[in-house]
Length: 166
Image 1 (cartoon, rainbow, N blue to C red):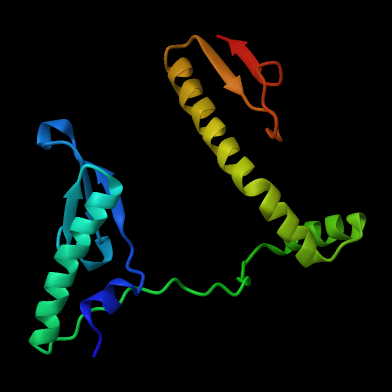
Image 2 (tube, helix red, strand yellow; image 1 turned 30 degrees about the vertical axis):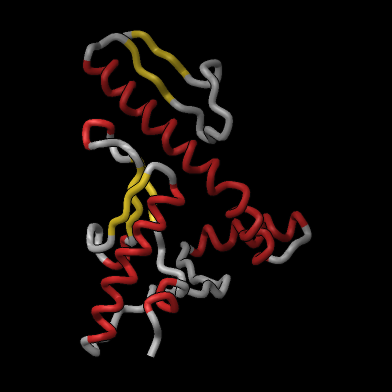
């Protein structure tokens, strides 16, 4: 049977956060996968908060051990294979194969490079498009102006947008 110290060393996730001044200040340390407030330690430094948490943890785990109750093990991170299945339209599949052939790389390499290069960029573009849409809706409702995005807004500037006054 494991000791409380051995359980402590299994790698449970710990979170150290600031305690608001109106609540006394300092830092709190918790183990969220065991319950948001089930295990809480506090201190003036991260080291003190974690030491306090360890004391609480070992006391509670010791009680579990003495009463022969099983104690939950830490959650394991999933092992990612590096593979996933994406269902796309035949037209997009054809376009991707064509672009990969033009670059002289496999479809897999082409798609991997596209995902790596564009995942952050696409999030930014969607955010910009969303802001343009909201602004356009507000402006159209007030009958002042409308905004039209370019067809491929990878690098949006005000000179590329079409602004029309009503």
